[in-house]
Amino acid sequence: MTKSVLISGGGIAGPALAFWLRRAGFAPTVVEVAAGPRPGGQTVDLRGVSKEVAERMGLLPAIKGRQLHERGFEYVRADGRRSVAMPAELFDGAGPVAEIEILRGDLAEVLAEATQEVEYLYGDSVTQLDQDANGVDVTFASGSRRRFDLVIGADGVHSRVRRLAFGPHAKFVQHLGGYTSYFTVQAPEDLKHWMKVYTAPRGRWVGLRPDHDPRFAKALLSFRSPVIDYDYRDVAAQKALLQERFKGLGWHTEHLLAQLPTAEDFYFDSTSRVAVPEWSQGRVALVGDAGYCGSPLAGHGTALALVGAYVLAGELAQADGDHQRAFPEYQRKMQAYVDQRMELPPGGIKMAMPMTGFGIGYRDAMIRLMTSRPLSKVMGKLTVGKPDAIDLPSYSDGPLRIAAEQAE
Image (cartoon, rainbow, N blue to C red):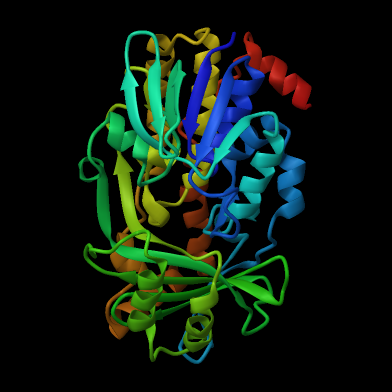
């Protein structure tokens, strides 16, 4: 099998898809607008079927070698005192902090190292797609043109492939009322392996997560807002916006803002949900955030990326590259799991980031109640009682079985 597949996006879903396609006999090429694997980023987790996919890839030892050891999540007051805490073992390990937590950039590096035989086109992007009955002609920002049998959009919430093949951004992306940024800072205190978040009135979050090096931490600045008209390429303007929104707040806010101008791994984006009814159009398909994203509020983006990549590659392998058979089966097998993992938590952004001091106190009181000894066991049973809504296919009769055996 020599089916050529262009994958747009070198984050998590793209390299994971390339991993499986390469081992199934396809010829994948990954195009990524960044100059290389993106460092830093927020902490992501592996649990349930996503952990099983990582095991089948043979990458779990490498992932565990880079995982962060977090004791849990806690809300703090302006003076740094704890308001409420959610330990990692809460709800039998099904709470906000999972058994395996890893920086997104570290996971991307693990995947990049596992796909060194794959062709990567860094510093480039797709600008035009012209498909016919036999393939897809692709024009790149660099000016080059190439032809592929299939094109897969794994390029995130603002997917260029989705815009070119499916329709405008506004058709599929729902703004959920907020914006989020991440960047690395010198740690202002010993976090003792806890993720800490200070909530200020007017729906603002100031957070810190542990880094591998205790001298540093991953900063989080999030705020509630209707849609803002900004240039996503103008990093200086985004940093200036955050300076204005967060100036004068308590806890470690001033420390974070002081290091914001020189942050090299800065990330800023809207809190948005992506829902595409049909994940394929002809020879073009979507995987991960490009096709289904519940937003940071729902979480599970990494899980959906890893599982979606595995199932999409498996179905293409099962169908001997026939996309007309593979793409519908990919969506059929994934749909229930996607629907489950895109569900927003109760109250959504309004509960997580209240606008008033009263709302913040109410939220913390409710969390203390749910995590109290009488109710935590009940909540744990309710949470753990909802298994992943997918029976992970084994693809035991095709090339992916051989790949799994080789990985073992």
